[in-house]
Amino acid sequence: MARIRNGILGGVSGKLGPVECFIRNGEAFVKLCKKKRTVPLSPKQLGVCQKLIIANEMINSMTPFVALGFDQAVKGLSRTANNAAKSYQIRNSINGTYPDQTIDYPKVRLTEGDLPAAENPGVAAVENGLKFSWDVDDRNRFDQQWTRAMLLVYVPALKSSYYTLSGARRNEGSDVMELPSSFKGYELQTYISFISDDKLGISNSVYAGHAIIF
Image (tube, rainbow, N blue to C red):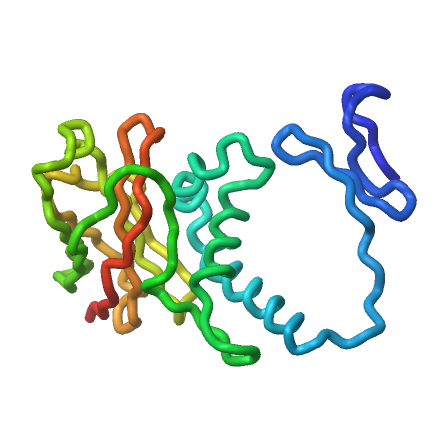
């Protein structure tokens, strides 16, 4: 059954015969309904499916982070920030062949924009957390020096993330993130990016390295 939104001239939502109609970002879409598959998937198709699973596991653990991180990248497009983030990982951050595909963490991108990225990023274990660091470049414009760090820690073994959307100012050169005790003993993958106070400017994320806290 399909439902007509906003009267006869509005968008249709639901199944209508062999097609499915839905609204996304204010636009109407129509696609064929899925049929039960009778032919086994090819190795290439299985590889694509595995990439989707891998990307979903990581990105779904940090939805608010990538929603802000890819918000500017999808402006004016009929796709969500979440889908853009997953698409980037599938195309650029997953190595290997099925069934042994894995994420190449230094290639992961979690935010995308035009602000200068973190230079010479690093991370080190401190008591109860991690210290992130980056170079302060005096050549950056004054307003760029006052952008704030977005920091993220991903724990592959737990498929869990921890992050801050508004950390230290870029011109401070470092920030400390206290982490949950449940992260202790696991390998942590870390990322830094910068965002303006009005959330309209953002940098590409940069891999800061991996660490373990005890």
